[in-house]
Length: 596
Image (cartoon, rainbow, N blue to C red):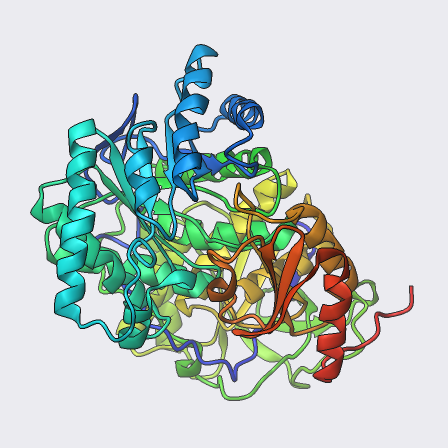
């Protein structure tokens, strides 16, 4: 392959302990899930409609001029659905003013109201916008002590009334489940789990189905990519069993900003899209909505290209797919490498050699002294030849050698799945090096290409080592991207992780400036996860796996958390970062930043 190759070995002590759910479709070629076609104003979502791109305002819903101006800018960037928060009846009512001004400007983009904590604003919003999102975790306030029968009766009564009102007004509903805001009752039954998210959704979906309400969209969001993707797959499995086909809204909430935010969003969304799951998406970044849309457009274009890739090739067929997890792989008990390195291959492709590259500023490499045998199969080959290569590998496999699955075409993920399936059927489970070459030119395009292909496979448990080539990206940038992918799928922590929301009309401080300040002072802390949340809607809950949290608690006020425990309440935002640093120091987790 052309160019240098960045290479990372995930730690083999890691056990990929998740259940992966797949709907009943081929996993060896692109095939989109068939869902109901849902009208949203003049747009349609699901069915045969293309993927729709959406975003959300990050200004106060009562600032009408700002809301209108931001919507117009986003529409010019290709936004097809635009959402505003409506935390009260006053804000929900003002959506009518915003909609009227947008229509006067000739903007027909459908509008969405985002509702939390109270049902009254949801009913008001139905009068003014084409779609209303409710959160089943807080649409009603159901305590842990409430029995399930009484709870379901309450949902049927209040939410049923809301559904009938939506039907009468020809509005669409989104049932938007958030990992961070499940009800006390659901948490008591299931914990903060994908199963709890699905149970929360199904209680509301059953009401829609009983009332023959089809104009419903569903989202299952989390800041943790594993949780988000598991929840979506499990939900689809449950819906399939009931012959329900509601369309899906995809997104990784609180993904953050910059490269990390884009990598997390891309892996979470694209790993589902490559399996045909998803009808609309939002890339949630702690940046301006226009930045979300520009990246989202590129992601949709990539999936569209993958969906139509080389249709003259033979269909790989539907196979019983089983992830070969890392702890099952032969020889996976030893940890061959703990630090990033640069991969070089012998000219015959038979040997693996990892050497130190001073440009990467690594001080140590842990690698077996003996060179490992590496067999290479090029996946960019006709299917009959690929089948023969796999059979030859099985016939001559010594039980120890690595297998490099090398490719550069868009169907790489499908061919890797096919190869792993065929090898496992024949009892050969080698340690696998995923080696993908990207010929994309732009930074975002390379990120999307590699995060989709490699991140999706790693998320499933495929791959003992990962490498990629990209002639348009420097070795250091490629290594950083690989480490970002490994961190996003929770395999290896190499840098501070920031879990931050994109901001909306509920945000109680300058979110983007605050995220930048927190990063500037805390980005040097390895293996820590820091949450920065604009308000309490998702704040504490979406920081479920964060070590520390910075959450807006009032205008100009901040609450500080250690895990899920609030330790400091209502301190001035100007002092909050200093207090957070003191908290980290008191826990013995602080280290001074390196000298420049």
